[in-house]
Length: 225
Image 1 (cartoon, rainbow, N blue to C red):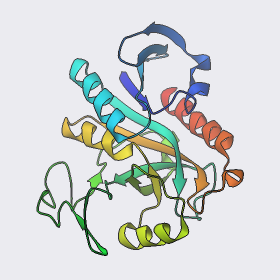
Image 2 (image 1 turned 180 degrees about the vertical axis):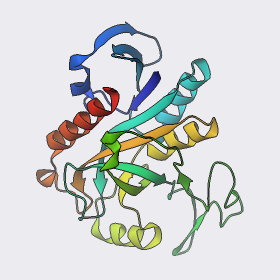
Image 3 (image 1 turned 90 degrees about the horizontal axis):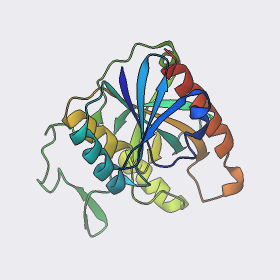
Image 4 (image 1 turned 90 degrees about the vertical axis):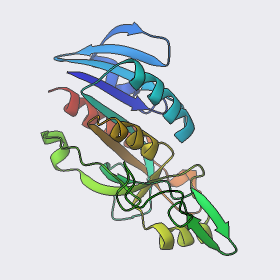
């Protein structure tokens, strides 16, 4: 099976490669590994939806895969999700895309620039309808994500955003990944591990090492067979 693993940075998935054999480093941010019965290409896109869209589009136009996995850490709006918990992002969107109209926000749908069910959207949301049958995924919480250019760190803006969008977690790449994969019918999965709660920015309350450790344990189980 040919698998494409996509991550914004190397440090988020670095622990995964200790048991894998390096095959080749390619141009275009891709490194190939061999692990048991799969061929694994790792694409490091850089941070943000623009970089993700560019490098993923370039990669998928040059080579075909059976499965694509987006993996990384994230912040959670929902305190019922534990720090370090790995989640399966079942829905994602681009909530910042639109226009201000005084104190109101108009989405692309409000502006008639996007149909509510225009492919690959469903009611303005990207839904991952791919089915993965693997024990590593059976216990994971399915969540609603949002993809943003500016992560939240101010109490007032967080409250307003939650009122408008009601997400569980936020990332800077997820919806771009999901859009690209669904546009070509590629089975995909977005795994995120919570490193922090979204609140007034306080790095002392974050636990990035725990989030990375748990993310890579899940990835290792998923890719082991």
